[in-house]
Amino acid sequence: MPIKKTSSKPCVCAKPQAHRQAALALKKNAPDEEELYDLADLFKAFADSSRIKILWALSTSEFCVCDLADALKMTQSAVSHQLRLLKQSRLIKSRREGQSIIYSLADEHVKKVFSLGLEHVREK
Amino acid sequence: MPIKKTSSKPCVCAKPQAHRQAALALKKNAPDEEELYDLADLFKAFADSSRIKILWALSTSEFCVCDLADALKMTQSAVSHQLRLLKQSRLIKSRREGQSIIYSLADEHVKKVFSLGLEHVREK
DNA sequence: TAAATATATGAATATATGTTCATATATTAT
DNA sequence: ATAATATATGAACATATATTCATATATTTA
Image (cartoon, rainbow over all chains, first blue to last red):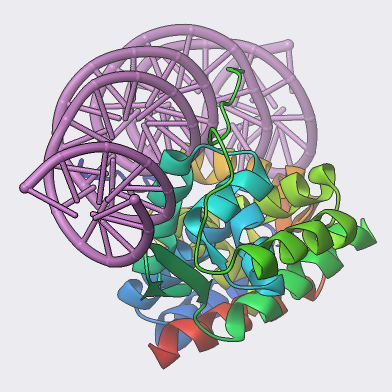
């Protein structure tokens, strides 16, 4: 990773005093660096329309891979790759059932995030 | 955009009947294609650690660009580029105040999404 | 008006990521 | 055991994107 150059010097902006105090408060109260990375990673899982579709489908019912592919008009391979990412993000879980692997949501968080997001999108 | 090949034929999976019905229900009740794209786009705005940091900062206080850069150890240019994306996503707003442009959250949705995400990340 | 400060932006670059293709692995049926 | 079916995965490719660098624009100050 390259070394990030910071801005050369603090600006003389409209609210220097207020911002200095706010910046200090930031450093004290902010979630630590790692937690913010995890948070960004969580949202990355939702940040692709293929995965959104998969998550939406799984929020209505569990599915095996090929039925997901069929319902979402995606190739089996593409679905499988995305399922792997979603599982790594702990958003979904799976179990084997004969030849099939059945995928489902890991918990209720996905539905909550989903509906909150939809709320925002629909407000406009 | 390339033509997506779908899986060649429906599988004979463990729960064909249940999944056929679920797939049909999906097509009837799913948010339309465009809405799902918008939803993915919304989460894309949260899906980068630089933007997450910016949003976190703005959830505690309004800031001008250079104070943001200073507080987050980013270059002024990088911050400005990201602020543009966040504004396009309607997550933040801005006003001019003298030489400075002051940025702040557009509404309470960001905080809600944020805290819901943190909840998930912290549960593990 | 000229200089200084704050912000925005286009081009270039490096990196990340989504899909495809080919193929490997695992389970079931014959 | 062999064939068929379901899923997973590595490599290659195309695209998206985050940052940097140089510079443009806008406001304030001298």
